[in-house]
Image 1 (tube, one colour):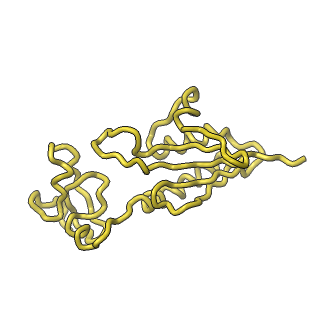
Image 2 (cartoon, one colour):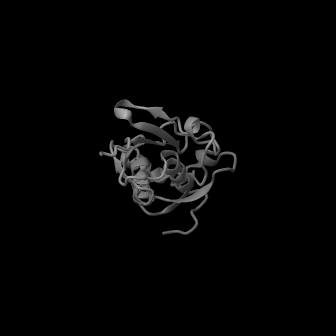
Length: 172
């Protein structure tokens, strides 16, 4: 494996860094060689062309994040489970696991800090995380990962977490 790719390599994605920005050294998940491209590229141009169909990076990213997010949720009194394919977005359900878990908003903010390093303030959390109430009394929150604005000339409208939190019911 080369440490620094050749600037003229057919593995590179020159369209990713036309203006000189976003030229990152990436490692191909198929051939394990290095290439220049956007920082979210997972395959070199040669392997992408040879595979016949694109590699879906989202399920891999979501899978890597899941265990640490479950540990965060557990520490806050919730069991965090997956429902859905992880193909487009990551659908999660947080179930209160103790009688006095941390607040829903605190859970969402903590997960947001883990994923992106930032969070909405307490005052703007409900609108920022697109809070809604679903059937069965579930509360829904959305953590956007790469939607709603390009900070690096790359956006993906379907890159987000959709977290439903089941209501806490304490039986007498």
